[in-house]
Length: 188
Image (cartoon, rainbow, N blue to C red; front, side, top):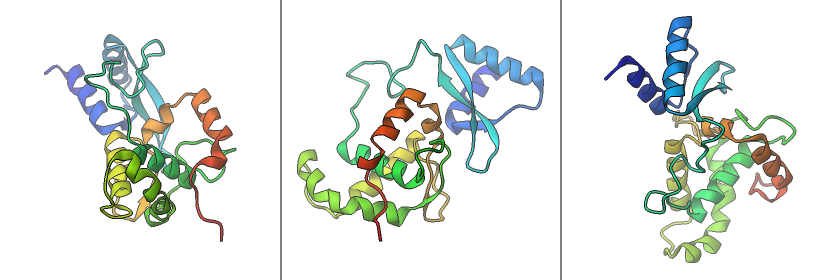
């Protein structure tokens, strides 16, 4: 495997990666990215570090990272969508601030927000009541694997992942306008 292909594979697997200090290495990486119709995007991590992430070129932007092929693309389940909505609301408490990186939210609080929605979603998804939270916990794991939520750090928190940093300003504006309908923290 060539060095460029290795770097691209590493970039895809790690989602975000430090900006190379060596200008030649950065130039090689940019060239490799251009060859596959991708681009490098700057993101600021939750720790405040500047890192890079692979993104699609502006003229190539599949909705979920795959081509519009019904054999490959699967629509997101209602559990996954509602779980992502609750995570966004909990991790983004002030819609006037940038969406990403947001702030950490307690996973127990997010799941507590979602549990009352189980009875409405379960019949729609054609599943029985296996537990009021199991499907939401599975959705959190799935969203972490896809990069919409940051990897689990075993601290009981959820953070938005780098895939959220790639959303267009138009998408974030839509989230802002519908912010009040996202399942959020309970008012005490």
